[in-house]
Amino acid sequence: MRKPYETLTVCGSEYQLKITTAYAVKLEEQLGTDLLSGTDKLGELSTLSKYYYAALVARNDSIKKIEDVYQLFDDYLADGGTLEELAELALDILVTSGYLTTDAREAQKKMTAELKAKVLEAFQKSSQ
Image (cartoon, rainbow, N blue to C red):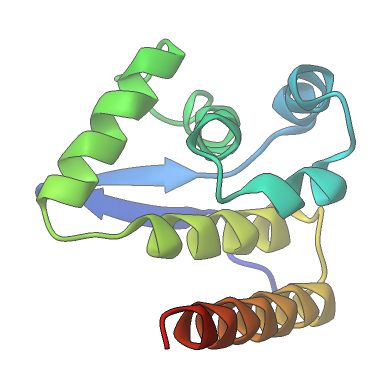
């Protein structure tokens, strides 16, 4: 059975995250692509923020506009979190919301790890 939502804790406050169909449609319109293709750009703050806004707005009264997500990110990072953690949680949110399978999530995770390894290798070669 699927979890009802993901949880993000920032500075002691818990936020519930799940993307409803209504916000999924709005998110696709903003991204100009489907939800899954948009995950290729989760490393971009503007894209990541849009996913989080869609996941937060329906379940958290304190989130009313995208700037609230920016502040939440600032607080999360100041609290010791990383953007990589936020990007990984965004994929988990898609699984919990029913838009991504666990297998697809694992494939995405593997591709991301392989890409990081290639970038690190290229960086190390260029600095020699």
